[in-house]
Length: 158
Image 1 (tube, rainbow, N blue to C red):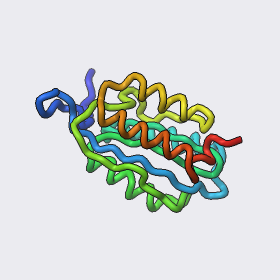
Image 2 (image 1 turned 60 degrees about the horizontal axis):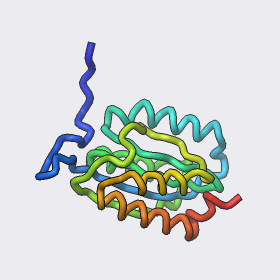
Image 3 (image 1 turned 180 degrees about the vertical axis):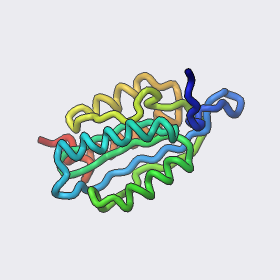
Image 4 (image 1 turned 90 degrees about the horizontal axis):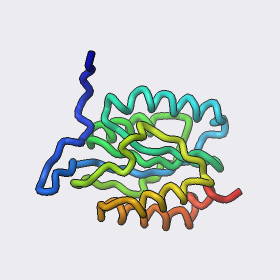
């Protein structure tokens, strides 16, 4: 029995047979009542809904901050962002990067993966070392730079 999922944005386009993907990275301030149970609930919902919408990515939660990398079809990611803007579990959403381009997925197997603040630099550096996609490399370098600045720096400080 097979199930039909909407396109993940992975249909080849262009001369390199890579998909047109929309990528959005943001950070936000977590509401005071957001605890480990709330983060677990967020992840469970993302893992249920993201595959149907063709969205993959990662979430970092810590130090009162959310940091999230989303990639997929533009309409799906924008709809998700509209829901996130209305979500009372966080505020002060700041978009760090936003692009739509022909490229490979950076996190193709992650419907939504939770990465600890202590591990985010290693995850981004590992992705930078393994990507052959120049657009992903450029975005990863920018995100690593953001980690050294406020407010993302709070995610990796004890």
